[in-house]
Image 1 (cartoon, one colour):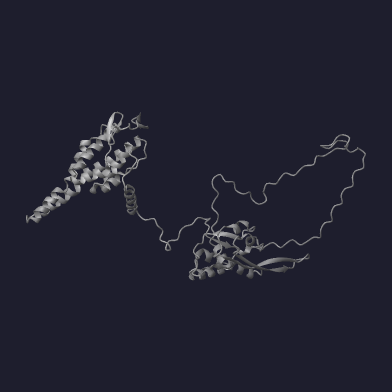
Image 2 (cartoon, one colour):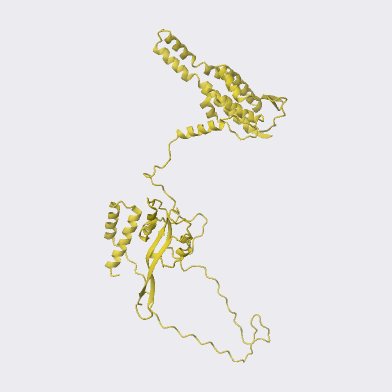
Length: 434
């Protein structure tokens, strides 16, 4: 039972009553008929469309009674079909006259072709409106509408809309089966609809895709941040990260003990073994590994998928800045303004009073000798503060020269900019004596 609301009135569509035979069904005192979809189509073909006129009348009459819409005129629908079927008659007559040797003027030929194009318009409108009415009938019966009026118009020249519409009507009358091949026809119609629409496919490789900022393409390395802690290599489940380093000892600027530092010599990733789990990126404590959106690094030989740190550095230049925070997200506090846990405050105890948690007997006496103050630890010898890292401005001339050389060599613009900036910073430090 389904509820239908039209013109401010709620009407309940009763469920079909048990039929007295296999071909009829009674709904709210009205009798409707189940028809064999294939049989109706074959009968329309055999009668050269005459049964189409009868079928069109009966179906629209059922729609008028089921929907309670007196504006539906079954006779006009049948008349539109009759007029549409008569459209080829003038052209057929002129063809017969031409074959018998009768002279047919050009004007008569134009009139015949015009009649073939114009007269079927009422027929097309009638087929389309019939599909819409069946859709309304399915909605009132509480079914999901599955009728496509455009598909009915497309297949109407072969009268295939008759089995299509009749199978959908039988669903309303309690027939669960559908016409064989209807799904195939609907799929072909969807294909035809998209075939006539403009293509939106990107013509790769001429058109490069615009990937999101956090695309997981390949793992990139920023060697300046690597402290050779080996965490990425130890956590890698495939053991595809190879690291080599050596230690260098640096004398302090003034006094103190010499300090040793690890220097990265080699950092390589074998992408023939990597399974792109991202564990190395997550465990790196100094942000030396990143996900780069680069994906064009296929090779003809699997042995060439072992990439060294220079290639990994170039992929870092393609890493995009992180997207802006979503609405409602809380940004991280600036440096130096992190939340500090409140320190415990020791209450002040006056002489002769009990401290919190002590009894009066356990309180210290007023004239008791104060405990000896603990000896303050000796201050360590002053050490020279580490020299602050000197920030330099990139050498603009070097930047422009290297950038132009890289672009002329066909290097990716983002990689070229990264290489040029690195070369400009090195030149600025060497020129400044750093």
